[in-house]
Image (cartoon, rainbow, N blue to C red; front, side, top):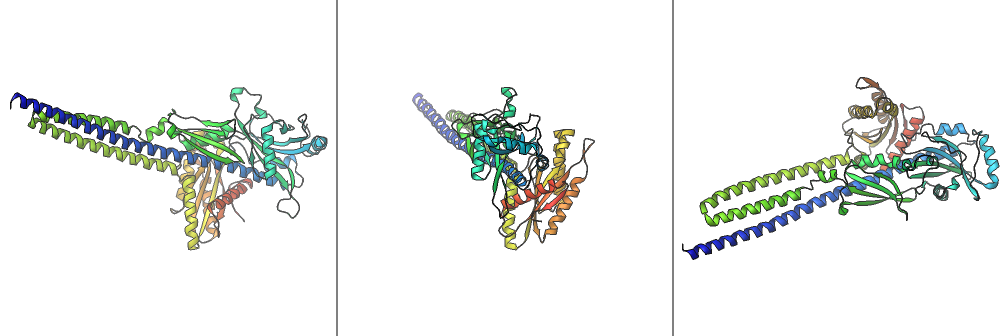
Length: 534
């Protein structure tokens, strides 16, 4: 071959190498785009799921607090001559271990300026002998705290006129006008004004109206309000951290012009990616709260967002390798064939690596699904999976004319175990309780942890109510046995609420009925069961 031929061959080789590099670059770019789009789509789905679950968790907690206040309002309204010791007895089962963030439970009565002496004398005679009402000046309508149960070490505000603060006054007005739970805008509690400013939390007041005569043929008479001041950070941060699992940062704000921050949960290192930020609006107590959910580095790591960078690096490397191989082919056919074999081996290795990466992605997705539907501490079903199974059981058993029973279990004495032995001992107790519940029930029954020391059980295929009672007795007996915690003995018992499915009953009705029955068992002395409607 002459010099001209060699030059043509060299130019042809260079053109071939250039074509290979351009083609490899285009394929690498396309592969990067596909993988990156898949990563972004997967991360977006995970963020959407977290946002939805957190919104449901916040709404559920507010509903539970509201139901507790409505029960208290009904109990107070049922008293024909309410006294201080009656109020203490009615609220005796409540504390801030069950109502996280709550500072107190108060009974508030309305009064005009002219009525203040009579109101003061009336409540002094009914258990508050030192009551001194302090009306807000230049206000015709007042709302005085006359009875109070304090949950922390803060000072009492008995005698204070809540009309001095516009935020709780608004909640009282809305609750009375609508006859339902109302939540105030954010403000600083009167009892917190004496602590350093940096230690104060944005707080809200839950209020429900109290009526006498409910359930009778006589008129319903408005008597006042049950009010529960709640510190926002203590109220929601534990729920946000538990449900967020450290993968997201959450901010809860009011949907108002001022957009006051109620609480925050900032675990881990924030990843600033607006495309992954999610917002959800939760309607609570006739107000609107907005949840803003942002990803952390832990979520990004869990969703393998680095795979796209690996893809482009591997693609570039493979493209360069093919270019070198093509250049070698232009110079030596034998050497090119050898290098093609090496490139083929490298390609197979790359395919195997990608298959391993894809398998890892599938494993991560399965793990996320498990975390989304199971409690991380006990391995039991969580609230979401429990609700799905209860809804399915009600539908299938209604067609088969069989009975479904729901048991709501709350541990008695769990707070004392935590206080005496520490939270690690509390975790051991919760896991032991979960194991005993699983062991003591049938394989077809569903056991779930609702959060804290609350559990729920679905009993399917029952023929009559005695089957559910026997199961409740077995649960109570199993949980009474002492639990060994590193040589120390821990004891808890169970208050159980039972409700049976009926014609037309849905999951929400059964859950409310079982929860109310459980509270009745708790208030009736604990370590027992109560059947709803019995």
